[in-house]
Image (cartoon, rainbow, N blue to C red):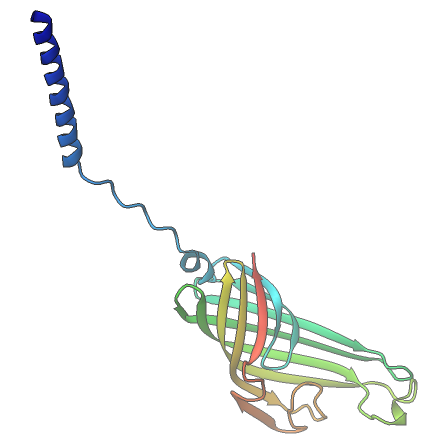
Length: 215
């Protein structure tokens, strides 16, 4: 009888302990929610600060080539573009075209986590040593190439689309001022004298396109 009483007391004690633990567990506050994953676009992609971009593009002024972009602050970036073309037709003098551009972009706003809109200013310089006569006078040795220098200024409005933190595509439209070079232009449609101002004109509907790899 005495052993049965001891067993009953042990069982009652175990039951009371289990009930106490259950009550404490129910009264404990729930664990805090897990912190949301960082949004890469807001912290990395949608800012120019201390970022270096390497890519290819065509400017509104007509310069095509390699483009380097360097962020100076979260919203400001400077951009350099350069490209060249060497043409050697059989029986003709050699022709060389070089184009360079320098500009800045200022971020106006961003859309969700993958896009932004910027406005900027850019100077384009194109120099071409070309054979302007297109007849027999352009035979090798008949005439020397003629140097043509063009100056263009544009104000691009650019839409950037970040596919991932390290790759972006862009398209831009805007204003382009082409100054006459005194000769037929080698790039664009500027008149021989005077100037031509294009306002959201002179490019395909999607604008001048480009691609940038961000390091």
